[in-house]
Image (cartoon, rainbow, N blue to C red; front, side):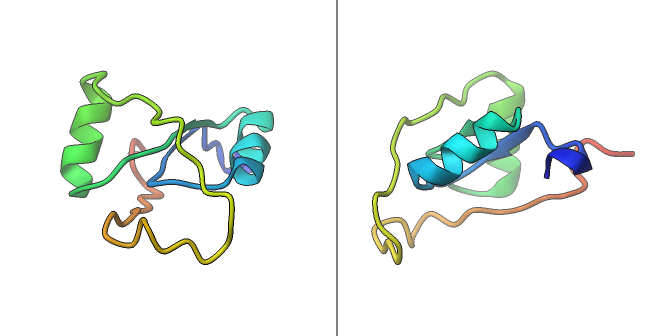
Length: 78
């Protein structure tokens, strides 16, 4: 991801291992994002998103199923 120029990940949630790995490679992670993609991006652009500091501590976590995470690889590219 770092080689692709990714510097930010807006995520629903993730474990600390993934969070630490991404952070170690210069990728800022904002956890706790959910909702429509356009709404999440608008909130980020308006400076309204803050990291929830929430992380999962096990695989097959099911308590986040209703909050999908979207990947938009071309966001910000022209």
